[in-house]
Structures are given as C-alpha cells and as structure tokens.
Amino acid sequence: MLIQSNLESLPVHTMQCFELPKQNTKMLDKVHRNFFWKKSNVDKGLPMISWEKICRPKKFGGLGFRKTAAINLAFQCKLAWKILQEKENLWVAIMTAKYLKHSNFLMVTPKPSDSPVWKSVLRSRSLLKKGLRWIVGTGENISFWWDNWVDNFNLIELLGRDSSLLSNPDCTVGNFITRDKNWDLPKLRIVLDNDLIIQKLLGIPIRIFEKQDTFCWGLTGSGSFNTRSATWAAHDSVDPRDATWSFKWIWHLDIMSKIKIFLWQLLHNALPVRGILVRCALNIDPACFLCMNDIESTYHLFGNAPI
Image (cartoon, rainbow, N blue to C red; front, side, top):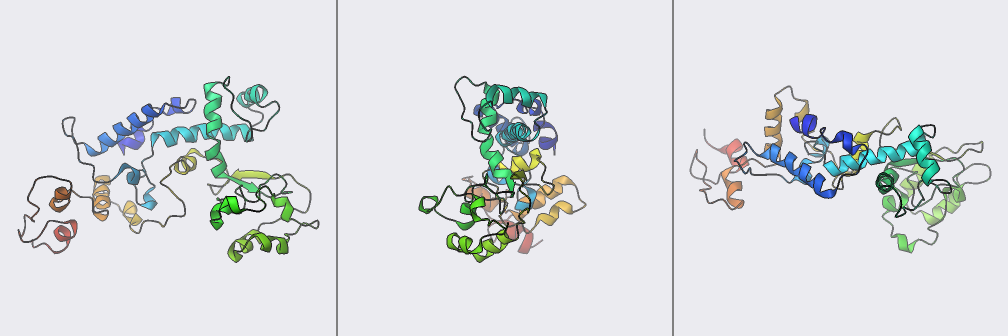
C-alpha cells in the first residue's frame, strides 16, 4: 500500500532522532486518512470505519496502518533500548557521562535543563517498560508486582489486582527464592491465589550460581528489540491478548490488493450501501435497486437479493 511504503516512510529520518509535536503527528495522520478515503482532491470522501480500527494489525481486524505518534515513540524507545544495551556506543557513552553519572536510566528524573532529545527519550520509558521482560537471576532487582517477569504483563495486570490493596507492594522476586535456589511455594501461595499463575511461575528456572538479573525484549521471539513490535505496543487500541480476527485468511489470498480491501470492508459491514448511507444522514432512497422491495444492506445485496 502506498500509505505504508511512501507516506509513513517520509518523516522516518526525523522521527528517529526527535519527538514530533502532537499537531504534526495529527496532521500526518489526517493526510494518511484523506489519501485512503478520498478518490480525488475535490471529493470529501466518506470514512466507513474508524481510523482506530484501521490502525490495528491485520490479524486483529485492521489494515496494519500505524499512527505517526506511535511510530515516533517507538523510535525514541529504540534510543532508550540502546542506552540500556549498547554501553560501548559513542552516543550512549556521551549521554551516560552527561545525564547518568549518579543515577540509573530507568530511575533518573528529567530536569528543566535537559536537552529536548534526552527529554523525549526519557518519556519513552513507559513504552520501554511495557516491552521489557526480566530474566531472573538473584531476583533482588526485579519488582515482584510491578515488573514484567512472569509474562509480558506484570502480576497486577495478570491478576487484575487493585494495587492500593497490596500488603507488600515493594517486595522483590528475590524475597520468594529460598537459599537453595528454589521457589518458596508456601510464601507464594500466601500472596497469589491463582494456581495457573503459580504453575507458570514455578516453570521459570532459577540459576544455581549467583548471577545478576538481566532482561530481554519480551515482544519478539528472539528477545531483541525491533521498532515494529514497539510501534504496536504504543497503540492504545491494540492488546496482544485480543482474539484474532476470524477472517484474517483473506490476506493470504492470491488476488489483487484492492479486492482484499473490498473483502475487508465487506466483512466489516462497511461498504457504502444505501441502508448504511441513510444511517449516515444522507437523504437517499434506502430501497434495493435490484428488487425495490427491501432495504439495501450488505447482507441483502450479497446474500439474498434477486439478480
């Protein structure tokens, strides 16, 4: 699609270094929207599906378009990941020497005197923490409740707990590891009432030899960061726990792309048939032009209308 191959790629170089103002990202999204729905410069177009739904992965029923702000945030998150992982990088060394002399990157607080680039990198930490998956070593540096170490979600999200009701919100994973490097099951059962989560937790290996806690990027199978996974994580409307779309097989059909888009609109009941146009406040006759006996709906037109 031209939107993905051309329009989305035009501001990429700038977005790799700088955080674009919100009005700019909204303007770019508007350009993408207009290009998709309008047939010409004079045609206003008629959006049949919300842009939120379109900007979802194809396996979740969207078209795989990505919001500009999410792409921008993913690139800033890439810089944050580089700070954590590439200590020998020259840019990382300079930033560390200037801003991280006496503090940890995940804990440092922004200052008014910080550069705009550094401030934008710090703002991307919320996305970074969403993708970080901790690998248990001693467990002393991993928050039991707040860090992602059992799954790609923390225990509060997995259990649906109210954080204000926790009796020990600051405990670490190390508090639940015995001296002989096993999980302290009785202690775990006191704080966790979900057997499925406990079984999943018990399957996490504990290293026999003392080793520091490490982390990987939990949103990819390889554990390595990529901007694609970070971009989808930055979309508020995309939850990896959502059920996959029943008709995702249409994208594997050996047909033209425009026919796939037509099928996608058909399956979302988003074709501009008369019955839908009337609900959009257009002053037209909703009757089917083939039989003139029923309202023209997607089901009627493609299902039981006489031909």
